[in-house]
Amino acid sequence: MREAVIDLGAITSNVETLRAAVGDTRCMVVVKADGYGHGAIEAARAALAGGAEWLGVVDLDEALALRAAGIDAPVLTWLHDPDADFDEAVAARVDIGVSYLGQLERAAAASGRAVVQLKVDTGLGRNGAPEADWHEFFAAAARLERAGRITVRGVWSHLANAGEAHDAAQIASFESALAAAGAAGLDPELTHLAATGGALRVPGARFDLVRLGVSAYGLSPFDDEDAAALGLRPAMELAASVVSAKRVPAGTGVSYGHDYVTTEETTLALVPLGYGDGIPRHASGRGPVSIGGARYRIAGRVAMDQFIVDVGDAPVHVGDRAVLFGDPSTGVPSADDWAAAADTINYEIVTRIGSRVPRRYLPGPTIPARRGAA
Image (cartoon, rainbow, N blue to C red):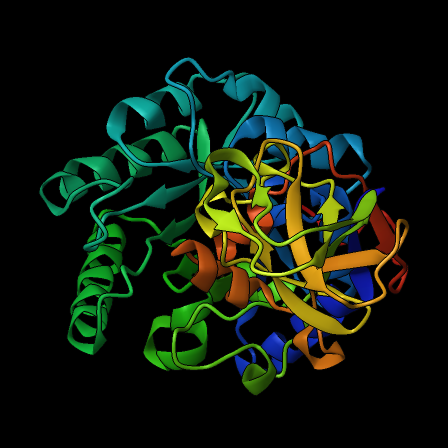
């Protein structure tokens, strides 16, 4: 009745395209938030088939789920509960993103030798050690590495995407952090600053590795350049079967509050997707829907489980497929169209699609479960 169709071949192709764009720089594909709604396990395998060397997740549970699925590629996880059990990370060969001294000491106290990547704040203002703490942070990391308690694999940060001048300032700040790390006696294998935006438009931010997020799923991170211009193909198509189609007279109120009232005799088609499935209620009256090759807009308010489309005199019937978004080259609306309708970003549109919507996977290339070594 409802489904999100995920084209794994598109993910693989997107990663190949992005790898070509960044040259010899290594690539991490981020599969946090269940692969931006696409399915973390499946997306990870498709990304590795496209040449990704690393996978990125937010928390340890996401990393352990990859390992439980037999995915043995290097994984970095970076946002931790204050009481996170780093023993599990060490046992699973997961790199631990560390942002402050106390967290570093807890990682060093784990059973076995923790592999860490030290995050510094270069201007985003989120996680990461501030510049005032760098000397102590790096000195402690070097001491713990010499003692055999940790291995410092990386030093990293994140661009704020606040404009060219800010990017340049953050690159300079990151280079200062790397110099401070070197002065403390650290020699990390990896240094990384750029996510997709920086990877594609700020070559000086690439360093040893770039982190690819929404772009791997075929969506653009830019306001002024769409996915097609970047050579990317959207991997998710969200659709559902029409479950009711009925003729109603002029003057019929539609959905809660009667924000929409028919102006003439028409057909109302009911689509079984709502905000309980992640359809943004803010797109009420604006969200685009394709049925039978024609494009319409939601009539009235999005409800928890359903919304209505006024299709006029079009021959729409129960069982017809309604596509909310997918690859616009096929004539259907895009996630960007939905983002505009809901005053949000394409990242949110795909990521918020809930577990009540089954994922159906179109196969991509197959690879062995084991790729690389953590």
